[in-house]
Amino acid sequence: MNFKNIKKEDEEVWKILKGEEKRQKEGLELVPSENYISPAVKEALASDFSNKYAEGRPGRRYYGGQEFTDAIEILAQNRAKKLFNAKFVNVQPLSGAPANLAVYSALLKPGDKILAMDLNSGGHLTHGHPMTLSAELYNFIPYSLNPKTERLDYGEIERLALKHKPKIILAGFSAYPRNIDWKKFRKIADKSGSILMADVAHIAGLIAGRALDNPLDFGFDLMTTTTHKTLRGPRGGMILVREDEEIFKKINLAVFPGLQGGPHMNNIAALAVALGEAQKPAFKKYARQVIKNAQAMAEVFKKEKVKMISGGTDNHLILLDVWASFGLSGKEVEELLDKVGITTNKNMIFRDTRKALDPSGIRLGTPAMTTRGFKTADAKKLAKLMVELLRKADDLKNIKRVKKEISFLMKKYPSL
Ligand code: DSN
Image (cartoon, rainbow, N blue to C red; front, side, top):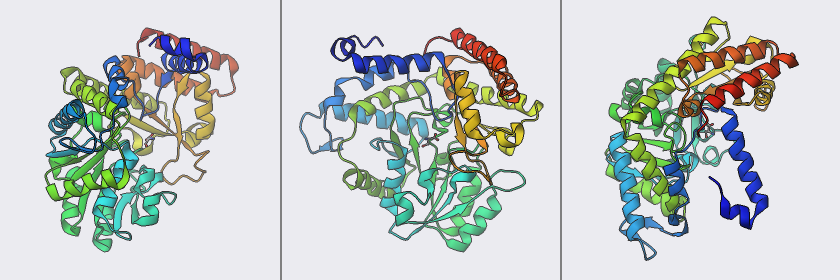
């Protein structure tokens, strides 16, 4: 974007906008929850819907002038329902955290139990981290990974479910590189009589692109997601309900007026565009390539004997134990990668003995680089460059060389 009006009116803001644009264009984005929106999604975000209040739902609003807000929200709903095979959807949550809180507040009373994965094993803050409001209100029972396989331990999840009889069982993770056996979760929830919820924020695009299984096809009652990660839409959230209208009605009331005011209609318009893009054959190809690229990187790490949590990946992300592999902390690696133009994030790993702000791991993901056009050969080259860099962390000449190679790779795929 040239931001010509901002440049004229407010040079201070313009400079910052251009700086971020340049950073994104020239750098290599490996944060697994980030992506690049299309020019069409960008246009919808900047549309006149930004000006409009629309409390309520299509056909039942509290303000006039809703002809087009209703049309765009219904279009987004219909596209989401079709793409994810859901009977009902609410597209108004402002993001994933508010979507999860809306589900909890719709279906639980304070003190009720939720069985969910703890943050260090790959869960998310909103799955019961002690610093969140939901952890103050509800009783989270954490599950973890199997220490040997570093994968989900369905036997242990079942044992906890039968012991605690949680009102909700939550599956879905922010840092789990493996496939999830949705069918096994369904069987466990049947035995414990729990509502079954998935949080597919990270993998929604891979599900939409039919590269991974959809939990709703395996009997999950509902699922939440963000809209801006692998799904490649604007920032936002959705709650999809498989078929239970009672659950859906409660969720609608929890979103509005329970937790939110007016929905961000420009985001919903942009979501409609992104969901339209996700219906196209090219998106299926994209989703498959995201996984191929992650697996190509994992192949190199394996060959180089770099420790990956669970030994590899089935999806878009890889968790490296950089402390065990290179004697560098996650923070040190994040900073070193920043120096050569690679953006990633430090991450706690399963059974981490270090602290959250300086953990043992880093988390890498391929959604953004795949949008840029990276193929498996590029992914392998990148993984090799990373290993070479981390093995010689103090070698300034090597750092300079890797930086040049990364810059060369990015010039090969210039458009955002
Ligand atoms: N911040 C997102 C992530 O990086 O996984 C989740 O909220």
